Each structure stands twice: as C-alpha cells, then as structure tokens.
Amino acid sequence: MSKGFETVIILDFGSQYTQLIARRIREVGVYCEIHPFNTSIENLQRLNPKGLVLSGGPSSVYEDGAPHCSPDVLNLGVPVLGICYGVQLLSYFLGGNVESSSRREYGAAQVRQLRESRLLAGLPAEFQAWMSHGDHVTLPPTGFEVIAQTDNALGAIEDNSRRLYGLQFHPEVAHTPNGKQVLENFVRTICGCHADWTPASFAQSAIERIREQVGDGHVICGLSGGVDSSVAAALVARAIGDRLTCIFVDNGLLRKNEFEKVLEAFRNYGELKVCGVGAGERFLMALKDVADPERKRKIIGYEFIEVFQEEAAKLGQVDFLVQGTLYPDVIESVSVKGPSAVIKSHHNVGGLPEKMKLKLVEPLRELFKDEVRAVGRELGLPEMLINRQPFPGPGLAVRILGPVDENRVRLLQEADNVVMEEIKRAGLYQKLWQAFAVLLPIQTVGVMGDYRTYENAVAIRAVESSDGMTADWAKLPYDVLENISRRIVSEVRGINRVVYDISSKPPSTIEWE
Image (cartoon, rainbow, N blue to C red; front, side):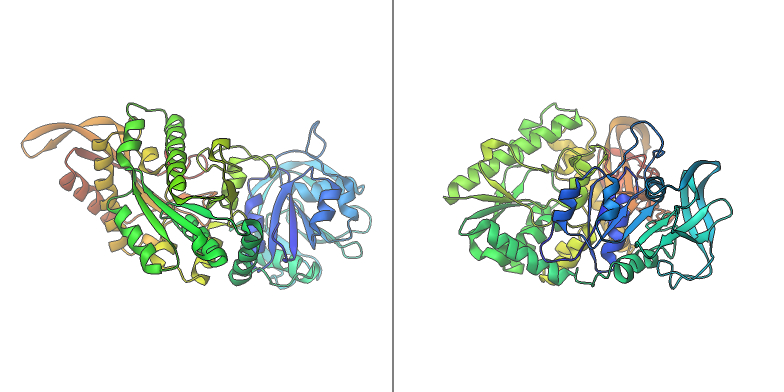
C-alpha cells in the first residue's frame, strides 16, 4: 500500500471488471487497491481503509464454494459499497432475499431513480447502466431503502445510518455513462476521501520510499526503452542520483534503429547514467531453432539476467535492480489479488532468480499505464519516451511465430517499421494502444510482376485500450491499411501477403504469443 494516501479497498470476488473499479476510483484522485475476497479482518484493519467495495463475480451467493468474505467487513466502521455479486452478498449477510432471475439481465438497461440519495446524487432521474447478472436482490435487508430500479431488478439500495450501499449495475464500465459519478459520490462524499492521489504526490511518495529502501546502496536498472522502465529509472535517479546505473541492452529483437534512437533520448534527458550493451548475436544464438513461445520467453529472460550479472560485476558493488512492473502485471502474472488467472509469464513479477543476488525495486508496482505516463510527465521525461506504445519484454521474439533467426527478425523489423510510419503519418499513433506487425509461420503463393512467389505472410495488429486489460481491435481506415499492405509487399523482400487481425481481448490477447 502507498504510504500517506487515503485508501479505498476493493475485495475481489472474481469479476472481470474489478480492475476497472480501481481505475475509475483513481481517476477521481483517490488511491485504491484490490485484495482477495478472503483477506482477514486483521489485515483490512492494518490497511486502514476509508471505504470498502465488494466487487462483482460469476458465482451465486448460495453456491457451494461461492466466495464469501467475513461478514465482519460490514462492522469495520467504514462505508461499504457492493456491486452486482457484492450487493447480493451484502443482502445475504444481513437477511435480505436473493433469488435467481427469471430473466437474466445482460447488457444496457434503463435505471430509474425512486428518491434522492447521496450515492446517485447528480445523476438524471433516468439513466443507462450496464447489467450482467443472473441472481438479484428481491427484498433488501431491514433498514435499506430502494433508491433505483430497472424493469427487472432493484437497481440500487442504501442504508445511510450504517453507511451500507449496493448497486446491481456496474458503474465501472464505459457502458454506464454516469458510472464514474456514482463511484465519485461513494469515495468522495460518503467515504470523505480527499483527492490526494496525484502524479506529483505519488512521485514524491515513491522517491521517499526508494530512499528508505535503498539507503546507501547502489542500483542497476535494465532499460527497455518503454515508458515503464524509463519512469521507474527516472524516479530512482531522483531519489539516489548517480548511484543508479541504467543498462540498455540491444538483444537483437528491438524495432528497426530502436537501440540508437532510445539511447539518444535517454542521453538528451540528462538525468540518467545509461550504458548501452550490444548483445544481439548472443540472444539470437540462444534462440536458434526454438519455436515454442514459452521457451523463447524463458531463454530471453535467462540471457537478460546473465547480461545484467556481467554488467553489474563491472560496476563493483550493486545491491538492487529496478523493474518497471505495473499493477496489471501483478494482477495477471501472480494470482495474489483474488481469483484471477495467471496469464503472463515474461514480466518477472514477484522476484528474481536467487543467482542474481540483487534485491528488487519496483516503484511503479501500484500504477496503471496511464498513471505511469502522468508521473513521467511530472518528472520531465521527453514525450518520445512517455508516449511510446507498449512493447513486450521479449521483444520481436513473441511477434515471430515459430523459430527466430536474423533473417526473420530483419523481415519483421522492416514490416513493423512500415506499420509505424503509416500509423504516425495518419495521425493515429496516440489514438492506438498498440499497432504492430506479426510474422506468421507460413508461406503463401503470390504473383509479383511476371513471377510466382512463395514467401512469408504478416498480420497487422492494431488495438484500442485504456489499460491493456481489455482491448478492441481498431477500425483503421481502409486507405491506411492499403498503404501499409502496398508498402510492405513492395519494400520488404520476402513478404507477399498482409492480413489484418480483427479479434479483441478477450478472447484473444493483444500479442500473438
């Protein structure tokens, strides 16, 4: 937990929207953390929250093995907001009735306010909200009043005397246009939180914590060129100055001319001591004939560790290693925040191999991507680094399906460079979460001039997202797609076909491997 910030705690019951609740609350300037539904009362008391949110979830409160928190969370003396499954559980604990709906509600619904309330203050008398439930509260517990409803269910209930509130709809999703106002009413008006969660306040707090953690130690940081590692390094540099040495490794899997461009940006920034290491041949040799994506990640991770070990040895005493781990990385990589599944394996979240003998500094572990960018601007990092689209830790290796070699890397670098140039030329770079090319493990027949060809195919991937947790495929203009395709097959010798990926996350991931 961040020191010095008023905090709202979300107890996660397995909802796909839990992370969105945290983001929306943070957007109104209030710090928020996600914890498992079974977090003990003692730990919750230790966290000293200003309020609690009980998330949605896929279960019924009556199911065997359904996730239940301790009923004592309602007696902590802080306001509690139950959302979807959360309001059903709240009602279940307090003697209300929860029943299976005769008509499952999924999608947009019209919610009508029945009376004035603190929770729904400032919302229209009737508003659209997103529903996703099978069960619903049919009779609220004693002391609760119904403050809103839909045609099929109670929309919202409240007990002001006990400061207990419930919503059947999901205020956190974009399909509830007034949802952010509801959450702001809860955390600001009802919980009494101040808007003390700002980029400047976080940066100052993080710098103080880094100084406390590192002491007189020396730190090494592995820069990737992305915004996460860059901001992490900038924070550490502000905290300890030249006792931080940054290492930027050319693993042979970066974008075209990436190594030179990023090194120049760091040196122009002036606050970071950066050492560039050329190790492309080493990585490609280790990846020779390896097609399995998980093995690729493991090999690349191992080689990075080896490079850092070697470079650290040249520096003398090094005690810590900085990583740009983000909150979504924590949620997706290590199942410590409730019943979420482990998806990613290339973030090194949660620790390092013992052989590294370095302690970990993760100053961004509490942040979402947009918050990282805001902190980077606060620190004065150049926009070239702040606005860079996310790039996977294993680099182009996870965008080359099948074996990785120098020629296939070259093909993808050239194709990807065309994508970047055309996306930027169309003024779309900042509007997209990511856009890139993927080299497919197939060859297709083509006709180029008077000759038949049998060459490689690439897929173009472009998505829109606010946090990377979910993503929609981008509806790029046809002329942009046409320019990308024409240039790739004309300029990149060895590619004769371009396809466009129109899948969203979920069910697909953003990256292909």
